[in-house]
Length: 124
Image (cartoon, rainbow, N blue to C red; front, side, top):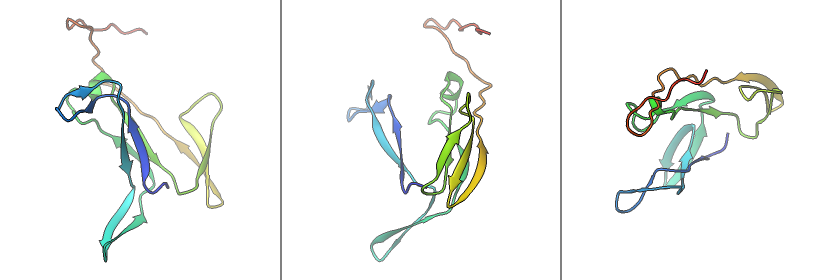
């Protein structure tokens, strides 16, 4: 597990004037564990491994426009090999042990529209 792991958002950052800055980036730090302050020093204890949903800041509008994601937390130093032809399954090796991992991000409420509020028809 990276302590802390960094995540990057590439658009929609907010400037000092409160306006969005197109094509800008902002770095966020994620930590999957417990952080305590003891004697003026941060003590980080990793404790959460596995998958979690990353929910959008606006749960009403962002998810149905395609803003969905998953965060997969692996042990520190883990390496993974994705299965050929897919990015949804892999073999993960950490601390001398290997395990299989499967990740699926499913979206069932997409509502994309053209300018003028015309719906984008399904392609398939």
